[in-house]
Amino acid sequence: MKPSVVFLQEQLRAAAGTERISTGVMNELADRGYQVVIVLFGTDKTSAFPLNDKIKILLIGIPFENKYKLKAAFYLKKIINEIKPDYVINVAVPMMQVSFLAKCLGMKGKVVTWDHFTLFAGSQWGVFFRIFSAFVSHQTIVLTEQDRNSYPRLLRKKIRVIGNFVMDAKFKSNLMSKKVLSVGRLVHTKGFDILLDIWGDISKRHSDWILQIVGSGEEKENLRKKIEELHLEENVQMIPTVKNIEDYYIDASIYVSAARLEPWGLVLAEAKSFGLPIVCFDCPHGPKNIVRDGMDGNLIALNDCNEMKEKILLLMDDLELRRKYGEAARKDFECRFSKRAIFNKWTELLK
Image 1 (cartoon, one colour):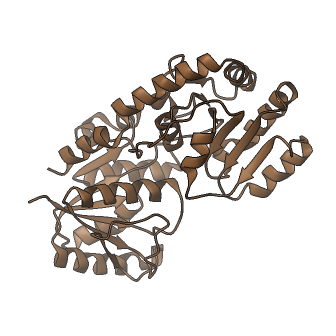
Image 2 (cartoon, helix red, strand yellow):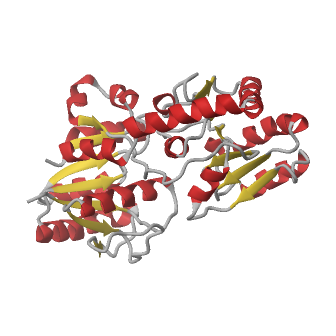
Image 3 (cartoon, one colour):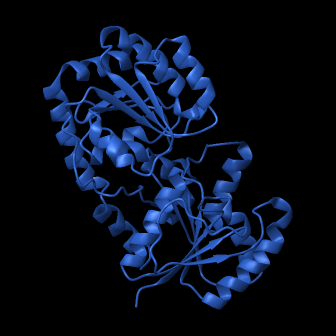
C-alpha cells in the first residue's frame, strides 16, 4: 500500500506558481494511488487550479496569522493524529511554524518542508528560519543543487533536490509567428519594466513583431504607463492571468525573461516543453539550471540589456536558429523536467 500524504498549505485560491505546482503534484500523486489530503488555513476551499476528485480538503478554520498560530497548531495536531498520515508536507517554509508547534504538542507523521525559494530570499530572520526548518524537518525539498549547497554542510544529507515538474505540452510551437512571450506576476522582481525598455529599442527595427506579457499583479498600472511613455501601444499586449496559457506558448516564437530573481523558473521549463528558444537573464538561481546557453537559448549577464536585445534580434532574424534551439529545448525538457523525470524523485522521497 502506498503512503498517505497530507499537504499543509495556507490557501489554494491564488493563481500563482506555488499553487499551480503544488496542485499538480497532489493530482499526480493521487493518480498514482497515494492517499492525498490537503489541510488549509482559514475557511476557503477554493482552488485556482483543478483538483483530482480523490483528494480530500480539510480546513483548520483559523487564519494564518501570528496571533493564531498556537491555536492553529492544536487544531492541526488533532486533524493529523486522526488521519494518521505517513508524511506531512509543508508547502512553503512558513507552514513549518505551525507544524513544528504541532509536532511539539504531539503531532504524528514525518514532516517534510517543501521550499520554493532560495535560502537567502528575504530577511536574515528568513535565512535563520530556513536553516532551523531544515534542522527539525525529516527532509527538506529545494529546487536546485545550488540551493542545497547554500545550506550548512551538516544539513545537506537531509535536503533533496526536486525541481518543479511541468505538464508535457501536447503541441509544439511552429516558431513562425512574429510574437515574443513573457509570463509571470507583474511584480518588480520579474523585471517587466526592464523588458519594456529593451523592447522599445527592438520595436524600432522590428515594428511588425509583438511582445505579449501574460500575468497580473501590483505593477500593472506602472507598466501600462511605461508602454504609453515608450509609445509601444501597437507593439506590446498585456494579458491578465489566463487558464489557457498553453495557447500563448504555442503561438509564440521566442520566450524572454528579464527577471531580477528567479528561484527556479517554472515558466522557463514550460517554454521548453513547447519547444521555444529562450533568452533570459542569468539571475539567481533558477535560469542556469534550466537554460543551456548556446544550446537551447541564451543566458545573459544580469542587467546587460544591450546583450539581451542583440540575442533577441538574432533569433527574430534567424528561423533556423529558432528551430535548432527549440528542438534542443524540447529534448532537454523530456529528459529533465517532464512528469516522469520529476516523479521518480517524489517516489524515492515518499517510499
